[in-house]
Length: 161
Image 1 (tube, rainbow, N blue to C red):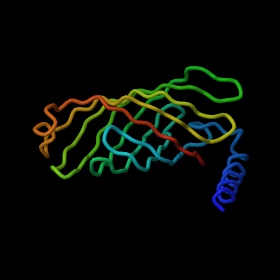
Image 2: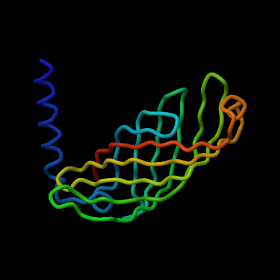
Image 3: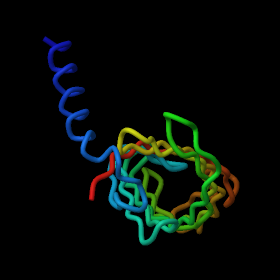
């Protein structure tokens, strides 16, 4: 039963992706959604291109608590991998609000990302490093001993027009 559902889901996603195969993420396909994570939370993510190389990405999720964050990133192409996709890197920054059992705090982050836009499927995979400064509004510094943290995250997003 699970195999049948899995195969049906794969067939449906392939059918949806087929018309978009010639479309390019960031140029023709500007909005994506999927799953992702930041330094402190994992959950849902969305990304909207504002131009071919600028995008706003948001994350909403849970982890040690609840978090919501947004980043502005500027992407640069690295190389094309034949029959696979385009590798890119991005640089940007943003902020977020995180709440957990000990209180809440605001984080200001830089973002350095590395990603891949597939050629035949409207899917993006990214990984990133996020140096973050936590504004101590909820006892974060008292609990963890530092207002500065280097964390990481990433995302898998499906794109559409």
